[in-house]
Image 1 (tube, rainbow, N blue to C red):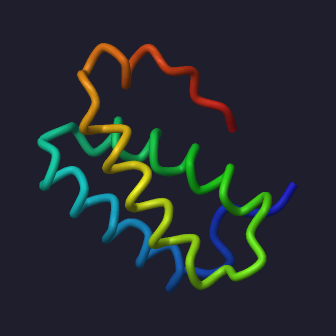
Image 2: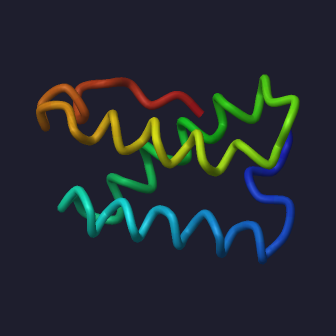
Length: 79
């Protein structure tokens, strides 16, 4: 299984994106991280251009968190 982050610098960029999403959406960081990393894992599996994975993870996590709170928490998180 591939590591989620290739190096500490990459992890720091993703953590910064997660913190921004938590601030933007008002959700707790732990929930944002759970949704974000599930989306990141899914995107990395089929990614041909790794440069866009962070951007797509950010956008899709934001979309998921903008849905009503019940649907976000009831979605199964696959890892």
